[in-house]
Image (tube, rainbow over all chains, first blue to last red; front, side, top):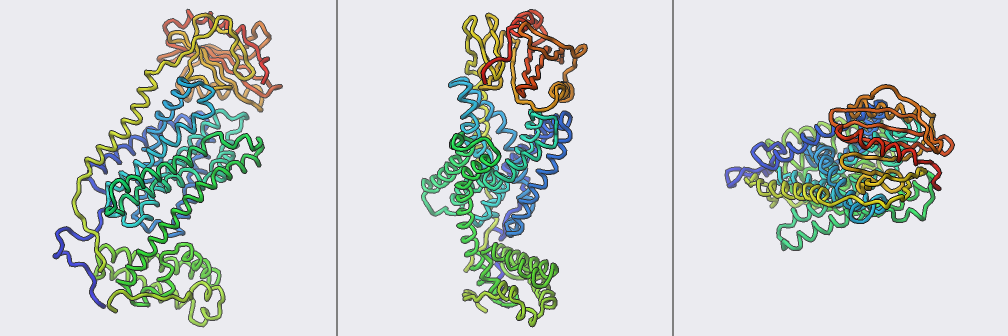
Length: 418
Length: 186
């Protein structure tokens, strides 16, 4: 093997990336203090809900907890959680759910009060949420993304690594806001039931709106931060324009969502409500999907280059696996096809193999190839051997699903000495 | 040749300070602006106010609190530190549900204590419901609640304020309540 480890002695500064635990950095302490402060506030607010509508509060906590888990599992299925260590996602989620929510509450109230005072209570009732929510919430959620970037700048080497932190921040905000609104809805629900408000909120805020609310908006806004961070060679004005442009896009999507626009074109039934939510939400979802796609392609090119440079051996990364490095959906489809053809154990092994390959590449990208990546290399070979033993070459040949999933012809460049 | 990332030290305090100033300036600025913006609207003598199905005539000297009034479902009047708030909401359950929930909210959620028993009331227009007085460390008040099963609505009238001077304004509150009926067109 050609040694490709970076020589630490040749560098003025140590090779590697910073962790998200940075007790010597002001940004870390600011993030931590504001999260803890928000946590106390949120617990205090929910304690009222637990005392007054306990069934709603407990059921809501369980439902929205499972809802958050479903999103996290979806992120994991697409290998997005491989972008950072768990503490990054924990901090992002906590900032969205506690830090941002703490500041959003008084700011939103102040704006809505000002709308009522300066225009009229009727105007505040109709347009207040559209005026207050987007500017306040998008700004505060994005502040958390900026703080996380400040804490560990070197962790953010691709657009995708920023976007997933933004999405997690938005998810935290969304879940805590949904829980809070569920408790409020229960306090004002037009029947005695404490269960119905939870189910109704799950349907409207979770299922019909979940894909195109806060997680999508913060993803859009975070794209500007990523562009600013990863294009230092561009003029500062252009980089700032990217930040402002993406923020404006997220704000606009959020504004339309909160506004009464289009409401008069739909009736009051549940079907009309569902149609309205979908019509309003599709632009945000489309924008977020487009940005995810751009980021995934960029991430794919980044991984392809690194893998071709560091790991030319086919037993570590086969050609078809190399081709799918930047295509999380294709990787997921391969795993599923593997599971359908050879059972759950094969699917699990394939999943582990794919993730170990990503970790291997990322480790090599940070520290170079050498003793530090040997453990990952061994793990990849061990997983491949276990998978081959389970699947078998003959079985692979006879299974159409596995053939379709696993054998994609690829032209793989070899940028590094073999 | 791939260039590795290097752990080059950098300062975060200017950025962190910038974020503190941005968040503090935004939130604090809005709160201050709100506090320093007058939010009252004088009411014409004899003017009938409507909120949901409820309509009533305010007593002289009371003003509308614009920030605490939401079009169609909440109307808040104030005089000094005393507030008279009328809230309406839809209700499709039984007649006792809203009161049970309100008592839970005030006793368990807001830490208020109910003074005496919940009693029935009826005003000059035949509007009837239940009422009780309450108190807390900083405020006291009386709440009247009317459930209209036919129109599937509940109307809550909450008169509250600082302990001092509450009894002086109670007569105003009772007169406003006496002038109330649930006949406003929806």
